[in-house]
Amino acid sequence: MGRGKIVIKKIDNMTSRQVTFSKRRTGLFKKAKELAILCDAEIGLIIFSDTGRLYEFSSSNMKSLIEKYSKAKEENHLIVFAASDVKKEAASLRQQFHNLQQNHRKMMGEELSGLSVADLQNLQNQLESSLRGVIMRKEQLLFQEIQELDRKGRLIGQENMELYKKVNLMRQENEQLHKKIYETRAEDDTDRASSVRHSFSVTDETYMPIQLQLSQPQTECHNSG
Image 1 (tube, rainbow, N blue to C red):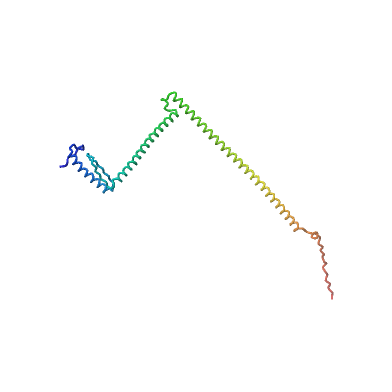
Image 2: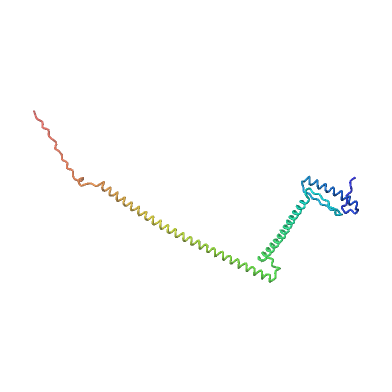
C-alpha cells in the first residue's frame, strides 16, 4: 500500500516540523552532492532553520561561489536592463514610424477628416515650405547641370581647335610632300630625256650618200690558134 500524498503546507506541530526539517535537509544535501558529482556542477546550498540556525553545503569553496553568484547576478541584471532599454527604444521607434505614416498620409491629402481649420492651415504651410525647398533644390541641380554642360562644351571646342590645327598641319605636310614628289619626278624626266638624246644622236656623216662603183665585166680574149 503506497504512501498517501502529503499536503504541502506549514506543519503546525513543532516536533513533527523539526523531524521533517531534519530528514528533508539531509535528503536535499544528498541530492545536491550527487548532482555536483554526476554533472560536474558547482552547487552552493544555504539553509536557515526557523530558529535561525545556519546549514550549508558547497561543492567547492562557498566564498568563491558567492562571489561568482554576485557577479553573474550583476551581469544578468545588466542584460535585463539593456533588454528593457531595447524594448523602450523599439516602442519609441514604432511610435515615431506610426507618426511618420500619419503625417505622410496627411501630406498626400488623406485622413483629413479629424483636422481643424488651424491644423489644415498648418499642414498647408508645411506643404508650401516643402514645395519651396523642392523647387530650390531642383533649380540648384539644373544650374549645376548647365554649368557642367558649359564646361564640356568648352572642352569640346578646345578639342575641335586642336584637331583643326592638326588637320591644317597635315594638309601642309601633304602639300610639301606632293611638291617634293613632283619636283623629283620632273628632275627624273629631264635626266631621262637628256640620256635618250645623247644615246640616239647621229652625225651628219650618217646621212651622207654612199657612192657605189660598178665594175664592168672583163672580156676574155681567146686567141685563135
